[in-house]
Structure formats: C-alpha cells, structure tokens
Image: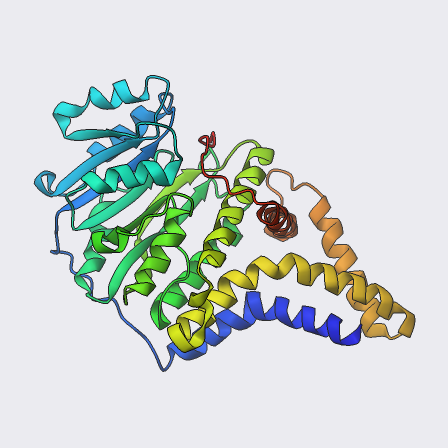
Length: 375
C-alpha cells in the first residue's frame, strides 16, 4: 500500500509538474529556434470541414474572406461531410469569390471529408480549421510562415477559449497550461499534440490519412515518422466560444480523448525510445501518463484510506487534503468565482472524461462520425 501510494502521487506530480520542469531544464541546453519567414508565401490550401452548419456558416465564410493572404496563393475549400441541410448551397453561392465546395459522397466523418478535400487540394501547405473557430486576419500568413524552417512538418495554433461575453471561460487556466507546455516542447524538440480547430501541415505529411483516427493527432505522428517536428505558434490564434451546455462539453471531451487513445495505440512503435528518442519520452509523458491520471488518482485515494490505520499525521493530512480537493470539485463554480475554486472542478471533470473515454475505448467505441458542438 505504501509503495502504491507514493508511486501514484509521484506519477501525478511528474506528469503535471516534473515533465514541464524537465523541459525547462533541457531548454537551457537545447533550444531549437524557429526560422520563420514572414515573406514566405507558398500556395496554401485552407480546408474547413462542415456538417449541417447552415446556422453559423456565414460567420465563418466572412471570417475566411477577410484573411490577409495573397488571393492567388490561397485556395479555400469547404469540405462537406454529406450535409443534408442548406450548407452546401450556401457554399456554392460563394464560388465566384474563390470558395470551393468538396462534398463527400456519403457521410463518413470529419477525417473522411478532410481526405476528400486533401485529394483535390493544390497547396504545398494544408491549413485545417473548424467552422466554430475564428481566425485573426493574419492567421494564415502567420501559421504558414513557419514552414520556411525546413525542420517543421506541422504547426499548431494556440487556443483562445472564451465565453459569449468575451471573458475567459472556466477552462482558461487549463488551456493556458497546455499552451505553455506546448511552447516548451516546441523549444526543446516537438509538440506532442495539435489544436484540432486550427493547424497546418506540409502536404507530404498528409498523404497517409486514415479516416478513423483524429486528424490533428495523426498529422503530428505522421510528421515525426517523416523526420520533421511539430511546433506551436503563439502568433497563430484560433478563437472559439465555450460550449454553453456543460453536458455536451463533457461528451465532446470523452469523444476527443477516446479517439486520441485510439490513435496512440494504433502505432505503439512511436513510444519506443530506441526508434524515436526524445519524442517517445515526450509522447509517454504528455499523452500516455496524462491519460492514466484517473487511475493514479484512484490508487492514491484508496491506498491513502488504508494508510490511515498507521496513525501517521502525514497520511491523515494527505487524506484530508484529498477530501477537501474533491469537495471543491463537486461544488459547481459560480459566475465570477475565483480560479482557485474553478480549477478543482475542471480538473476532476477532465479526468472523469478520461476515465469514461478508457471505458468506451475498451468497449470498442471509436466515434468516427460527429455532430457539430453548439457554442
């Protein structure tokens, strides 16, 4: 019990604190700068995946047409996953403004629609975005400029997750932590994940495009296999609103994590340090161990309960702290409440979603098709 308790506590601390601290230490000796070229303007293809989005499609189209990138070097493709409402007709009506519709012959999921679009895309660089994600005017120019660096195979944007009134949502601290971690990974070697709502890749990285694996994670893994690295660009920002319905947001997390676990175990060779060196350590630390946190939390709680019999103050204190933390987590944060009250709630919510994702993964559920989350 004693060994299990301290092992679980150590793994939790390592995953959230030890790993980034090790990256910080490594960055003092190994710092890979990005040789971005602001004048680097290759032919780029922007692919926006849609399914029954007639209600909010107009806003995304307007945002896309306002992007600051040479019109003769930006191909705009809206990839419809066999939409059944007026989505396709709206896209066709903008054909005279350079927007192209690629329609999947039958509904096959987001990645299937993206694959159909990639097969027709002409760009050297493929940029992916969601309907719900608004790009800053120089978003394409910024994200594409990173490919002037020949070591870069894919680029992730940074997220700005906001409430409808423009304030940072309850997940703000969690998202900021992820963005900070990605910046450290970019500096030392490569990121381990991309923001699925806005990312870019060299076209050659997009050749192997399975339709049953999340495209953002698969793109990063393809990048590593091809000998490139992935980076996060703080100047490329994707802005998207918080999902109003917390239940739907929880379901989205479960769906996303289930698909991520599926991608990780589709090719476990990437976790072999003999073949992929430092990236394998990063992949295990950032992804595998992060997705094992619910197990570590459960083990820490149960073993601590048994260790109370020893009468030692440190175990009484640690168990009391766990109860306080989970008590705070069960208290729904109220509008305007301090971040310290919100963090336990979202931490537990995320890890409960991970636990549910493991259950679905082990039952064989994979979530290939999707319905847009209403924000």
